[in-house]
Image (cartoon, rainbow, N blue to C red; front, side, top):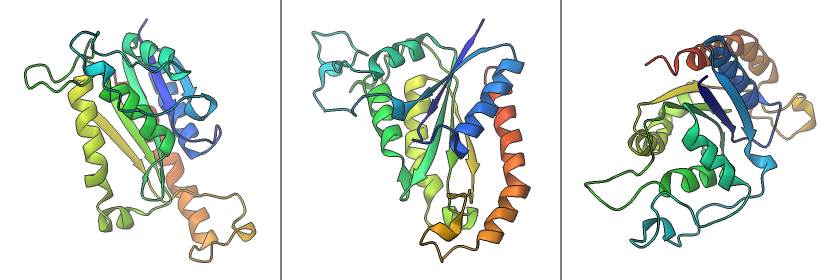
Amino acid sequence: MKKVIAINGSPRRNGNTAELLNQALKGAQEAGAETELINLYSLNFKGCISCFYCKRKDKEHGTCAMKDDLTPIIERIKEADALIMGVPVYFMNLSSGMCAFIERLLFSNYIYSNEIPTVFPKSLPNAFIYTMNMTEEHVKQFGMRERFAVHEGFASKILQAETKTLYAYNTTQFSDYAKYESSIFDPQAKAAYREEMFPKQCAAAYELGKTLLAD
């Protein structure tokens, strides 16, 4: 049975990102895959420390020297058949946990060689699911897709498979906007958008998970 691993890059285990990942995993299960959801913020780990152990000629490439909670996760990903990364956008960037995860996974399998750009052991279908408070108009205005395309490009190159994406815009951040300083938002408009669009975003995530291994 094929295995699909999803990485929740949000500290919220039951938030927007987690819900979309769960829908994607339901789709993968429908397609006959075994699934696993990993919550990054429940792990004790750090990002890359630039020791270059993974690039040394006298060491095994593709092996990160750091030993922490992320070490066995990376090894399980190498054995998996697909990877889905849930990425909440915090302050115009990927969450810090997801940035650290990407550093550890991708950089350790990339060497400075035009002949051998990746030492990842196989082609791994992969996808990013982005969740954000930003509207689609804001994403265009600030060039967010172009910014994230850098990560997607490295994922495609190093994991040796086309990286798929799903954008969930204008998500709700609070259950009660009255409790927070948030006067730039219209809570009723946010709620109406979520009621209309989040089920569609969940359906898109389900379809992504169902078809990720089909290519």
